[in-house]
Length: 161
Image (cartoon, rainbow, N blue to C red; front, side, top):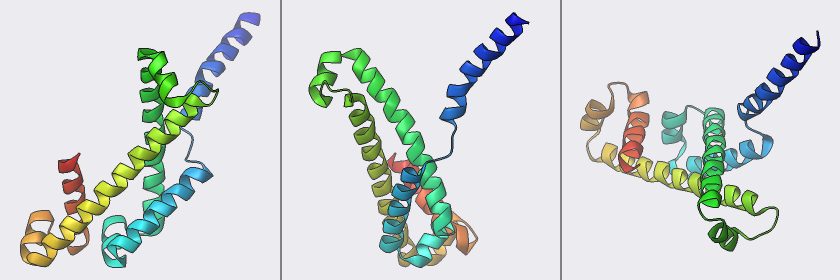
C-alpha cells in the first residue's frame, strides 16, 4: 500500500510542472496581446485587420499564445546564457534575485516587438501589392478575397523570418 501511495505522489509531482507549462495565458499576457492587436487594428485599418485576424478576440487569443511561447523561449535562452557564462550574465542582468526574471521579461518583450513589427511591415507590403494590381494579388495569394490578404501577410512574414 505504501509503495502505491509513494508511486502516486511521484507521478503527480512529475506531472505538475508539465500541467503548469501548458496553462492558458494569464491576464497580463492577454492585456499585452490586446494592446498589440489594437495597435495593429489602428495601423492596418479595420478591413485589413479583419481580413488578417477575423476579429479582435481571435487576434488577442493567438497573440497571447505566441507571447506565452516567447516567454518559454526566453527562459531557455536566459538559462543557456547564464550556464554558458555566469559572469557575463551577472554583468548584463545584475546579481540580484530577479536577474533571471529581468532577462526573461526583456528578451520575451523584444521578441514580441519584433513579431509585431514583422506583421505590420508584411501588412504594409501586402496592402501596397494589392493596390498596385488587385487581380494579380488575388491570383497569387488566393482565389477568395477574404483569405488573400492573410495568406500574403503569412508568406511575407515567413520570407522575412
